[in-house]
Length: 303
Ligand SMILES: Cc1cc2nc3c(=O)[nH]c(=O)nc-3n(C[C@H](O)[C@H](O)[C@H](O)COP(=O)(O)O)c2cc1C
View 1: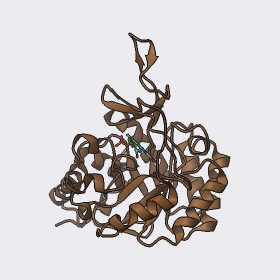
View 2: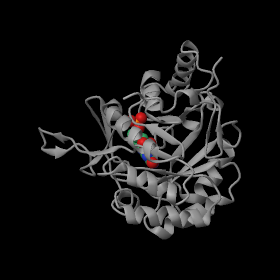
View 3: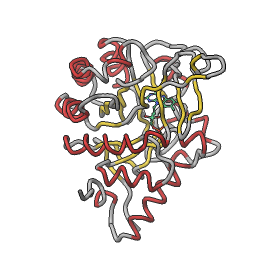
View 4: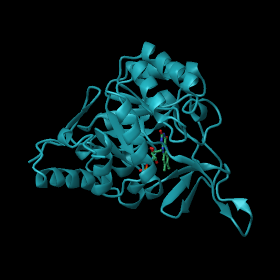
């Protein structure tokens, strides 16, 4: 049988399929439905230094082939997360990647340092690309200079693998990918949800209290495949592809485009077993094509 294990900047994963931040809670929410140890990695909902409430409701709206969200990154803060959720997560044989964010450059560097000494954390995914936050996290992903300072500042303060998560709404994704690599990132992930909005024509009000939000799901898959292809051509560090994966075929597209691993997000709300099923589909595809390992497929796009 083909080998589907991968190594993302030192994080060893049994399968190349992880679950995307914000769509899988902190793990317990899905533990009765999914064998967490069968996932490539769990990426938890974004954590910052202090507890945060998030945005007003409504925070989600369904759209054609996707969903809009403006959750606003509610979370229990560093201490709350470590006390409440890490003991549970440590029970499973699965890498835990903590998605982190901040409002300022200092907060990014601080959260990196705080997690450095937390047992059971495999790596940090850095959210610099949340479309629903008006400070730091919402801006640093589209400003190359701020992005560089955020990642370089974190690199100085932690030895954990750093995975900056890139924003899709930039004019040149390659420059962000290269900057991440230059600043010492161990991998990059992309894409975050795409800035978007929807209007209720009867009330003439936005469907989200935050007015705008982030679009995710199948609607953004082709956008994400293009950006993963471009970003992976610009760097030597591994790329984690995400955006609209519903089936194993969607994931294989990312891998052919250049992704070493992929993440399943919105699909978890439809079928919590998607990440497990996608991993099975990738393995069968490799078997059928006589490939010994998933790395033989990565970046094999012919143009
Ligand atoms: C409800 C919801 C909450 C999210 N929360 C986060 C978050 O806390 N941090 C983050 O980096 N991305 C967050 N995301 C973005 C996803 O991790 C993912 O990048 C995006 O949804 C694209 O993948 P998908 O189309 O498979 O959902 C969130 C997405 C959704 C739908």
